[in-house]
Image 1 (cartoon, rainbow, N blue to C red):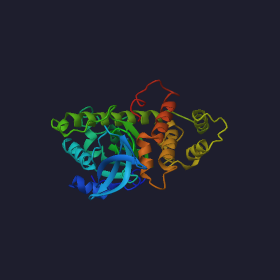
Image 2: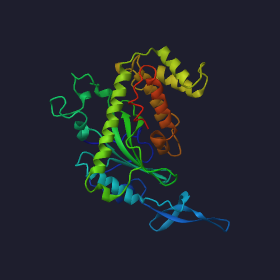
Image 3: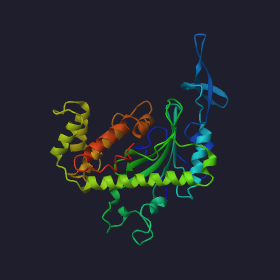
Image 4: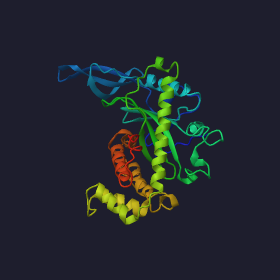
Length: 336
């Protein structure tokens, strides 16, 4: 299946990965083919032995400073990380492949992504419907059926940071096709140990891939509940104001959310987004996906959706919505 890069989802300098591209070619496409060179930290002739600067080195030339860290922290070189991701996909028995790579803020963060759809769809409910597998949402007689115009893509993303003391982690980014609203889901609780020897028997690949599939399944269940839970527009407005502790709707955030919810929701004409909780949920993700996108580097907005303030806002809002009609916590467990 041909992958088309969704510029509304993968903001900034994200690039499609060509079939057969080497890790170096992948990095070059995203202007991220550099080494991270630690150097001693000093200022005004004074040495700071407990700290080191991570410098970007392109073709042997030291360039900008990426970050400042303690001396025990060792950088995971971009070439090593990209090779790991390529090996990870190769060990999935061709179920996934590198699809997207991007760098943010001059290389302070690098991410890679592979699409969890098409070839992996059989993992969702294999042999449970008597037809050899396939996603329930694609069978018209299945209760989980969702029309093509309101389906979701999931991408498994690996994000490494050179500008902040954040661990390298994997996420599943759920992308609503009709509107390119993105929301991150957890795949693993702990930092991934990026050692090639851990991939030899494929156990790590299988564990992470299976967790990613489970995360996308839980998202689908949450989506199904929200679609089938009625909610009048007036009641949805009250929930927005209640969540933001703004009874009169005076803050800019609440005004923006209400405007999207009532008038400007992308795909709002679909039956699945009328007078239900799913309409309100998509107003939130449309706000975090398309409002206040960094003009200097839109990739920063994408990372915020994965593990920053936008991710926290989505997680808290979805948990708040579910608390209105259920005590089940399944969706909360996977929202990043």
